Length: 433
Image (cartoon, rainbow, N blue to C red; front, side):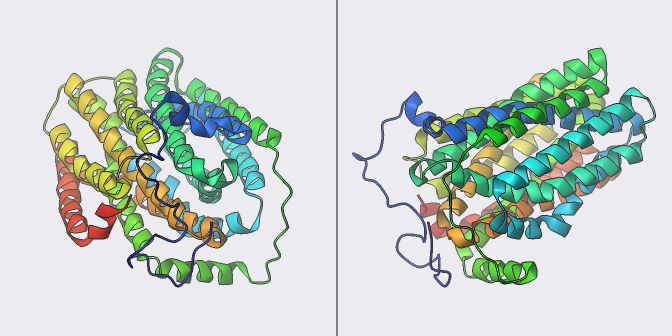
């Protein structure tokens, strides 16, 4: 799947690297087989099973860790500090992580990064069980986890292209989102109960153990022998070449801008869930878990719809509609104090987020040249993970000064104005199938 590096994505015609459009009669019927088409392939099945177990543990840790730091400090700003520490390495290393993903076996990269993440989770568990854990320990471990993720994320995003043939790529991307958010729907709720009954240490331990599933399945994967590439350029030169290529791809750049804004001003709402659970809903760790899980439920439903309808929907238009839904739901969330309404609104927010992220990923994967896939997915990952800590710090500090409801309202208004602007400026994206 290659494209002309000098081509202009906003010009008429079929996008570089995109599959030919099928007529309505040629498109497959909607069925369970079509919805889970990616699972026909052995390597993808191994990836799917290992990842969903590992992600379940990861969501347990993320939920427990956020509540734990708030319980230790009783300060919303520390929620922002942890998010910022976790995402700061994205700014420092993720673009280089994309270059590494183009140079080294992505399978080997993932085995190394997943092993490091497992060790960090078990260290946090040990500190918690021995009762010597301090807020700065959690922040430092979040920073180290962010370094591992800076190399893991670009390889993981590009790796799916090696697991399925081109015709099942969009389905596999949708299934990736479904498994991620299935774990997001169940993991936080289980974390809330586990936290309340056994304490946070067990949440961190379960996460550490869960990494064994994905590491084991990565080792079991087999690939056809391929010609080993010889790289004569330095990593810095490769990085610059990737950025020069990306500069010519205006459609991809516009999609990445959408991801950056939706992450910073939309997804960052999750930073305040622990404070919202306690200060607004007068709940506890279980309440926090249910809030996280409600967002995951909406994301799973949307992922299944996209996986089933990927051949029929206008991906660009649905992406923009998902973006438009976020500020509306956020405003509704900010003005209510009911647990039931909060949970229902978060289902809508979860669906909106997945519509944006899933379809953005799919569009970029079909537009990018294979020679630059790792580097472009590195920049794509940066547009998500790089702006997540900035958004977390921003909304945490804002909530400390103006309260959580007003902080969410301000973010929603900013995102609403951005959505209107991008809708006006992106007529071609609205027509993109």
